[in-house]
Image 1 (cartoon, one colour):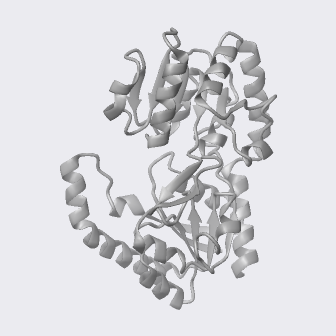
Image 2: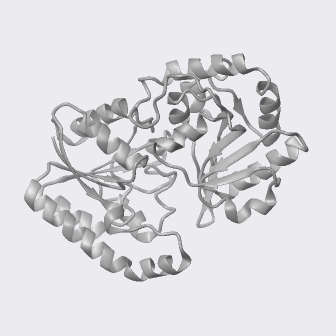
Image 3: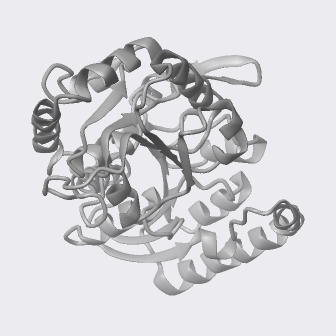
Length: 351
């Protein structure tokens, strides 16, 4: 199978991790187009404004590069990771050349990223979603007729896997997650539930610095952390937190949010002890009594923190059990093998 792969390429990104796992599959020849090289990501307000102004030019350059690689490489499949930059008309053009187009969809709703993206998702020959609820709701809630199947997130064995025992702790509680309103609200409620305790808390990820006045002064906000540094930092927390955004409102309509995230598997691969928000899907992949304790409310989360902090041996037993469960079954190599199988089964493209 000849694959042309479009996605972000920074180390630790889900797109790059899956791309590398696909390259390790037997019978696969793959070349990559780095989306973030053609659509640069910036943080400053001025540069974000410049990027918005230049977006049409960036998009034309991206389309031209895809056409060049299609002509040179002649792939059997174009795999797009999310693909927020592609239009429905451009995807029709590529498919008209006899190339199957597949989307790996990692987000909770294809309605959340604008009209162009919403229309484009309908043009893929196959959507492989990381959300367990998408296939069932694909036609009824989201309004699409193309096939949608489910393959979960996973961990990157070359970035997140660590079978050793953590030897040094910098925080009692650690979490890395991009700020979202629900996450922010949960953490303020957690701070209130923990009260004036001396529990040390570290939070990584974008967006938290702007809200840090809402949290105790003793809490540390360390900004974005990616790649190998991501799992090394988390292994330095006695207890890691794995939040999920259970529901979202898009254009006034309530839709399902996340049942799991990539950290659901990365934390287990890194042998971190972690507490995860309870979901129906999560209860099918971990045992909450022996592998990953779960919670439904900030108050229940605070109770679990107070319970597990003093008992390191118990935390280690849970972390070891979750690690055994996840490795290697929840690796991206296993997910990539399933992706290849489904592409062959659904649209006839095979290694």
